[in-house]
View 1 (spheres, helix red, strand yellow):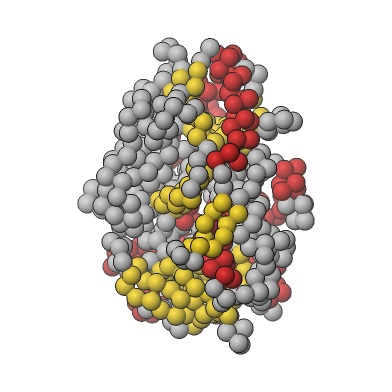
View 2: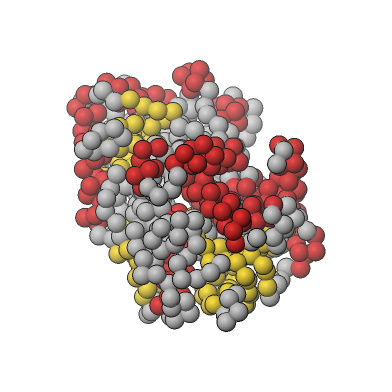
Length: 539
């Protein structure tokens, strides 16, 4: 497809998104009749559950192939300003837009100087960020059209080839790095920070300080590509455009600057005229009919709470893109309730945290991090070649609007521990089995790296950030992966074992780790898989 044709499709898709927002529609389509209907059809040739990275790729390619496709999204379309004129709220002033039906926000930093300054009481509402608790582990999830792309830090990192080959050895690395990773990066709008500007700007003083400390300890750093528009960020600092990354906007969405999926893949998918997105639709059950089609039981949600209706819709081709937790739960429920009894025993296995562990360091009074900090990271400490404790540590912001003398990091480690899900009939939900002790390898790896940095700089860990006195926080993950692993619960292209025309197309396919932020890998893998599926299953 030419760049002009793709641009036209994105323009049409963006127009459809804006039109839906303007009139409060829950159906989004470039086809006026489909958008105006506001009701779900009884049948769609293809259905994609979710609107995150894998789902968005799948919908675009189905739409381009001329296949009518319905996307079912549990969250809202985030395109309507609130009373303050903004679509999203900031981290410093969270309100009901922040979290998914919580009475109080649950930010990853639980405290500062042991005071809970980051969280506030809020009205329960269909907010943009969810934190799902499973005993010793909680998982952050994006809720809305665009999924996790709405709430992540935009770090668009292609994994190291040798580690990708280790994690998914049966996937052709030549194809991935020659075709699908470049395609994903181009479609996502990945860009890099201007190096000269980086060295002199206020926005990344905190990152330059961490780089200085890392280099003093003998470590190297690497610039990180992003789907946040760094040109926009430069203009933010110059006060030429409204601020977003420089206005403490990260985990509850960005009002400006970020190329979330609703501006890239999803806009292009809608622009084909063959894709419709239905919002506030929660898929609960999947049943296979005798003719081979699938029937879904779908709850229509009220954004202020409650279920408005329960409907049935059928499809010939069903793609699960509800994320590692969501897709795995749908499959487990279907297997254990007898609706899809022939699902593989591997469903629910191979889950991991991508080795996530967060920590902070206390700097000397003369080492300031700055009162203006970009919420979009641009630098990481790269110690992945360490044969014992490989780590890639994102240099994260603490955009509090004041000097904190604190450096924050999200370390991604090579943790071999894996959890698994089982179905709990009493709650009709999937339960993750993960013990806090399974995160210890991640802590050991991060500690080995940052002990050296602290020794070299005569600094110490912060122990006031996580609600108690621990220096390392490994009780949550931003990067849930696994549960329906490629080549185990599915074939090598995401086709679910035991059931024709049923597919997984998201992070559930990846066995627990990518070594970097995973969304580029999820996107590229989805590009690879849907290309094969279209060629063989829709012929």
